Image (cartoon, rainbow, N blue to C red; front, side, top):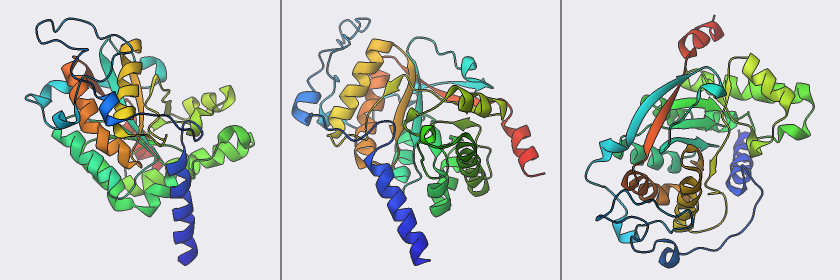
Length: 284
């Protein structure tokens, strides 16, 4: 039991240090990153924000807005990555690496307050370590995916070992949540054409990333929100990569969601087209 606890702690430490990219540092502060509302003008709401504009929100404004329901968009049912066709000003929120005690639960509470749904790509080892939190994600109506069993860099494994890691991770998430993990993301976004083909042929949808929040960098919550909004303004839409294992992510999420609503974005919920049928076959 002691050895298992040590293994889980080591895995959590690894996840906290990096995910889609390796450890780096960037500067940012609440004072500079959250400038007064410059990107949006109430007198001219149609005005487009420049790609390099700061997030138009001060720390004092973090929290609720008048009509949180207006941020929730459509539900998109997909069977492949090509089905995820987002219109301008549509985003998909995705959270990798959890579940993590306190942090995942705080993020769930914030998402509920803003009435939006996200996709959680769970690491199998983390789901088994914290099954009650994994179930809370499902019970809150969010979409489930997998992220391998131990967050391995699959490009550095043999093909057979990589497949085993993917399958073990998916099975672990399913066993805990009793929901099919119909979506998958490669740790570190480290894929190969052969692995992508295998994942697709086995009924999972690979989730790529258009907007990388880089919340795994050791920076302020404001810097994460600013970076995310700047990237989104430049791209106009896309799948946003976040992590539910970092305190800074939970801290900046209300500001990010407030800003998305202020600039007219909609949060799209993903649903796998064959989720019920796939889950039934897995338990036959």
